Image 1 (spheres, rainbow over the protein chains, first blue to last red):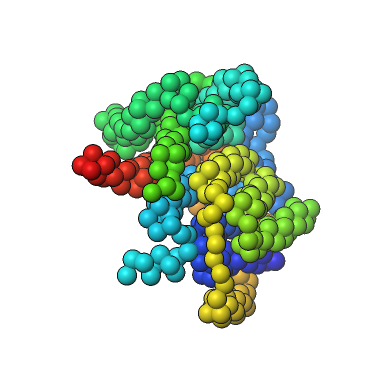
Image 2 (image 1 turned 90 degrees about the vertical axis):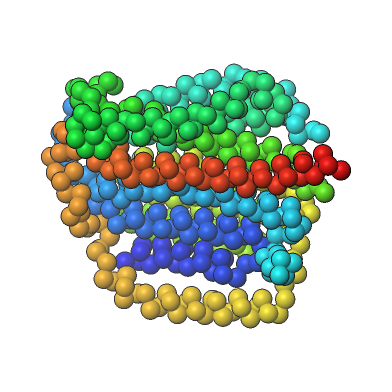
Length: 112
Length: 149
Length: 185
């Protein structure tokens, strides 16, 4: 319970950064913090006490294993995160080239 | 520009010695994805990091001579298409999309698990080439007309 | 129980690190401080018996830091003066988020206890290592992502491909246009 709570606090810290910061880079960093905590939450669900990683080894009898399904889902999600981060970076660099600033309030003002 | 000339001699020498070892390690991780931790995603990122290492150490011009970046753009699409074709072969031979069409082999052997290592290789190609092409595009853009105007 | 202690300890460090990263004035320090959060995630994956994820998370953290540092390091990028309006918004946001946190405690109590997953879906894969027997792949995570749920992986590859295309498109169109303008001039 306390572990879930801490993980949720991490998510809220990221949300705080997205909502209050005006610098585009800070927003990208906060988004990645939110992504980490979401992945962590999924894997925390699958942990089983005194169980081993879900990989068989030669000459070892089968023991109880942790839940492999959240791990498989998170494995694909981490890759997509990196693609999205790179795309956001490309957008931010583009915006800087046009508006000469990373401040989102000024970007909005200039475009309107 | 100093950035396009690369870093010092020490960094260049170490990079020249280690880059093939890193690529070999990435290939090992990809091929053993069904026996040990790792697989297409992890191995692909290791290979992309090796190319990135060369780009950071030697600069953009040298990397352009050493690697053919145009082929990398094509390899990304090729990997994705081959993945799809394997899925369609599954329909033709076993009746369902992405079915395991090859012989399963023996557990704990390298050439086991049928179609899994092959898909792993394709995913490794997509991830490694794709991520490197991404960073390459960012770097080229930044050097050509980043903050000027 | 030692796993609980370690996970709580690392999560505490990650929360402190993320607050430091968000409130940091210097951009380079902020980017590097986010590395704490990513590497902490990797460590926790290792404690939760997920070596696959630990490797991938570690490598991706390095990659993300390289991309961010390479793209954003220029001294004259970041000048912003805080306004009174911004402070009011910050205080309001913190209040709302704390309220959300207190309201969500009941929700978190309803979840299954840490260390006792329900495992209804994946029971079949793990019991007697059915997944390994059916696909002959010793790594059960790989057998799930590439055999049972290969369709997911195909979708993931498509999304990654689209992200690559998006990056190239965003960075290219304007450059071509500017080149043609230069040619006209």
